[in-house]
Length: 370
Ligand SMILES: CC(C)(COP(=O)(O)OP(=O)(O)OC[C@H]1O[C@@H](n2cnc3c(N)ncnc32)[C@H](O)[C@@H]1OP(=O)(O)O)[C@@H](O)C(=O)NCCC(=O)NCCS
Image 1 (cartoon, helix red, strand yellow):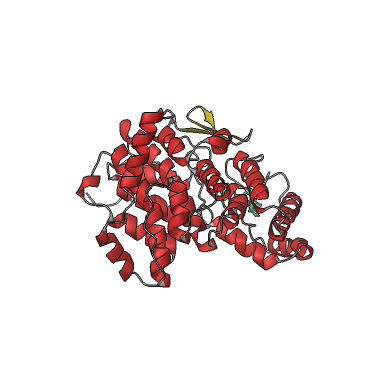
Image 2 (image 1 turned 30 degrees about the vertical axis):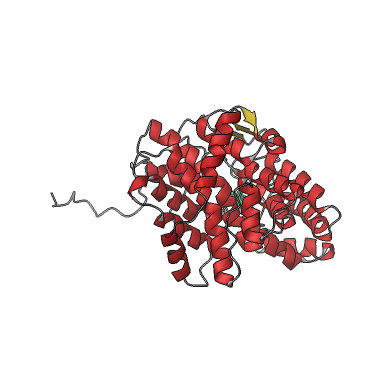
């Protein structure tokens, strides 16, 4: 069978956006520790930082916030497209279709911050609109006075979130906004590198994000914990999976070979938010047991908890339905994708790696063609 390298260790581009140091467990956004930004900065400030390269002053922040608010509304044509999609279409496919449909001629090459803001603003609205449309429940329109994060929860739940919920979800967003040359970011940059438009690039990235090896893991984490059900079952359940050669969702990472700094932060937040919660006790126990068993079954592979494991805990604690975990991750990562696309366009070169041919040759002749 022909092997696939997964481009491991290949440098596809230089970037000034983020540093992901997997050996030392460090994550830096444009010169700031992501874990520090997550404690006391807003989504708007951090999105600005990633897109523009510096934190905004007061006036810049106000203008940027207003631009995000002004672009929240879903165009009617997109609502109509969503209304016609089959009811059993999963939310990531809906998002991929709706974002793709936004792509009129105003989104042509070269990508701009304006274009990025339009997409970043509207992704939560698409998710919330579809969430209610498919259930036939009331659609809650955006509330101007609310932050991007509070408004997302408001549009989904129909009530203004508590300060603790807003802070927890903000921290989740900040910690997942950006993460170097991961599969979806690479997909986005690869599409844009042909001088295609930002909508096509982000549509491709959503497709990459959907897969369970990338953004689809947190929902699987919830299913796994539901299935394990009790602390007593954990070891046997995990052993059975590993004996069958299956993967444990929420563990392992291509880059992090030590503790992922985002995990440490999200774990703390979920513990604060959930307080004494049997579900969280189960998660903590499964984490400990899985790390021990992964070392037993896969010695030396350095498999630790990844961001998806405690993302699931935080999202659950803010009452996010499990089916919206990956779409919510997308609502956050669309900022990182946009920053990368702007950077790619500044000094573009088409992505064109090579493959090694390991197939048959047609014999000794050199062919008779042109
Ligand atoms: C994230 C992930 C895709 C990285 O993959 P990768 O860098 O290509 O790592 P590999 O698939 O080469 O794995 C290396 C070894 O560890 C094992 N491994 C990796 N993650 C594992 C997991 N979660 N459970 C069990 N074994 C795992 C692999 O089976 C492989 O074993 P081998 O050397 O015996 O073949 C992978 O760890 C994974 O599938 N994790 C589960 C899905 C998940 O949580 N995704 C969210 C990522 S943020």
